[in-house]
Amino acid sequence: MNIKPETIQAVSWAGKMGKKYTDRNPQSTKELNELYRKQYGISRVKLNRDFLGALDRNFKILEVGANIGLQLETLRKMGFSNLLGVEINEYAVRQAKEIHPKVDIIRGSALNLPFREGYFDLVFTSGVLIHISPKDINKALDEIWRTSSRYVWGFEYFAPELSEITYRGKKDLLWKRDFCALYLQRFPDFKIVKEQKFSLKGSENQSQMFLLKKV
Image: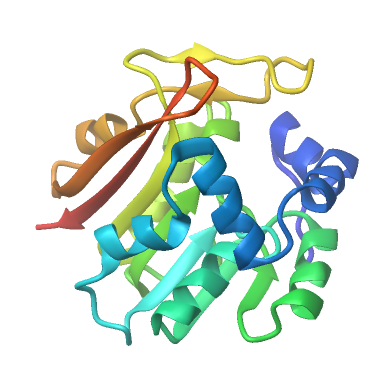
């Protein structure tokens, strides 16, 4: 699929910055869980079980911003089988096919998901919405809402009010806010199934995990 990045942030993630991100981050689910324990004192597997443990393992699930597929591989090991990821960085997509061949990831943009309305039972992001500019975030949320028939799940940096964070010495690349509240304000058909905040060790930052359901 020929993807033309639509924003300054997308150009950065589709290019060398995205490749460097891919190479310096965990390459296995074991490394991912160790990172979560170090940062939050809880494994990603435990978080997933707490939030998704009761859901049907046959659900169609889409991850937006899947990188090399670690989150999807973690879900696969939980028993979920209908998994797909969308990722804007071509290098990450190639790496995913080599490292995690049992999950499927295609190139795509959060601002223009190539799927029909309600195609998935659950659509989720993990550390992705924070990298979408405030002027574009509603478009991304609209696409996530549009392609999910039941649930939206997220894990993102949290702040009561919108605030920018300098990302590796650069501006205009990371923002934290209450993404759960943003979804609820924009889509009145959502209700909260579960929401919890987690403090990042050695930092003033918090992350928020939330599961929303269409009613």
